[in-house]
Image 1 (cartoon, rainbow, N blue to C red):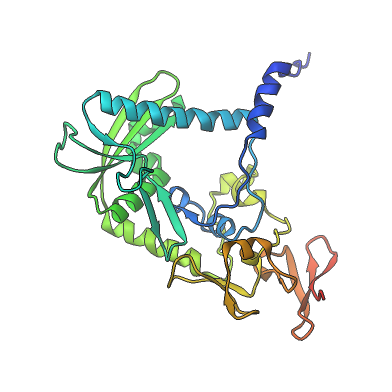
Image 2: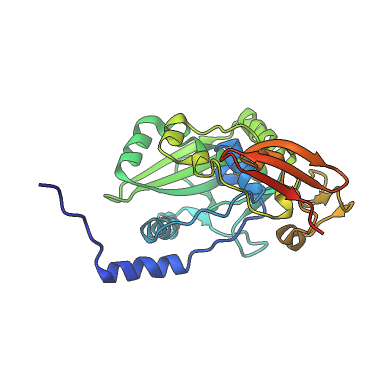
Length: 309
């Protein structure tokens, strides 16, 4: 006899719907330090606003919210333990922020700390993370560099940008509240690699190759989610536009010969032509004077980009 489908009670559906209604769908203007060492194509796509931001269901959003709650708890527990934990930058009253790659990449630390029993006089960048039981046990076996390379890379960026030689990784098992603490050393070669990577993503006019793990692609995750999709229209998906490393997050348009504000980038213009790397098909014809490009899409359809006005 087949199993009966699992149904979600109406009240639970309302709870999830309320979380989904509050979900932010903003296109972030900068590369994220927390995802910098993820698939290079995925980071370029996000930076270029190539596709709408991912939307999550209510249960997933609840998991994210739990992570934020644990950040606050762990910060307070460091303070209660006598550690000189500083969650905000006294100069701004906000989280310690780093900006790099010509202003095009940024991140915010969870704080900084002194007076650790292991090294009382050493300032540490602090990173809080919450894990499920399987992930936490993997962390215990392998330590953060091997078990969570994205987290390790994130701390390298923060240490390098803040000028600190150590980071404090504090993780909690959400299943049983067990806490894991690891001091992470600054790796100047790793930091240099990450800075080079950020600048390469920012300045690239061509879409990078996908670097997602094969099992993710097979399961429909990573770049597989946007495979064959038509891109979104904004200045950042236009072939005329470039990001530059010589200023404060500067973007310029070769078609109009000037720099673009963030609002202008979001709005686009009537002369927009998609970066060909984003179109799921092959270019078969073009007219420079008429400002149009004809493609044969993977579906077999003919599609013309441009030629408006």
